[in-house]
Amino acid sequence: MKRPRALRRPDFRVADIAQQSVGGFLLAGPFVVTEEVWVLAAGMNWIQAGVTAALVALIGYAALYRADTGRDVDEEPDLVGIPTRFVSLMTVAFGSVLLLALIFDAPETFLVEGGIGDGAVVATTAKAVSLGALFSVVGAATADSVF
Image 1 (cartoon, helix red, strand yellow):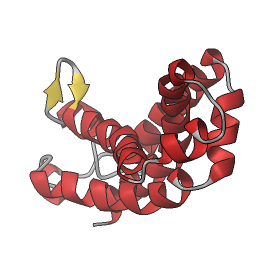
Image 2 (cartoon, one colour):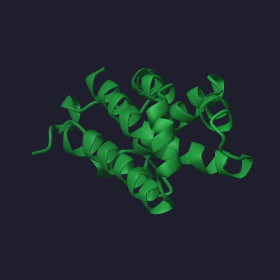
Image 3 (spheres, helix red, strand yellow):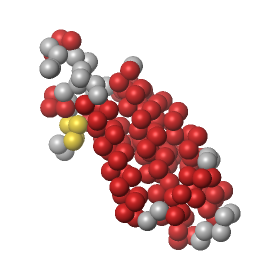
Image 4 (cartoon, one colour):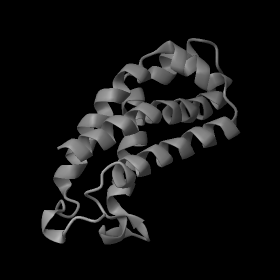
């Protein structure tokens, strides 16, 4: 059942990005600096990484538009047919993990010093970002929905 337009949340705003960012960074931090995440990522193949990234998108979409009945995906502003709020959520989920990994120099610490060669560092970092984004998207979507 849809809520009347007057009772729905206002359209997507810049403040929503800030809320998503706080939640995303909050939950991404512990996973970026955990060696087990990087070891797990090193052992993943590209199919597993792709499925993990798809799971991030599924969790994000469900949290924004299925769990929160106050939003209507059809009435959200969109960017090339994709709701702007969802694009922002995915950017925050993956971007916060990548940014923290680079700031903390996690690829160097966990991969290069662990003996993984230069070519595999970028690939393993991408896989680790998809793993961390699983947790980041939960924090980002929750912060967006609660606040």
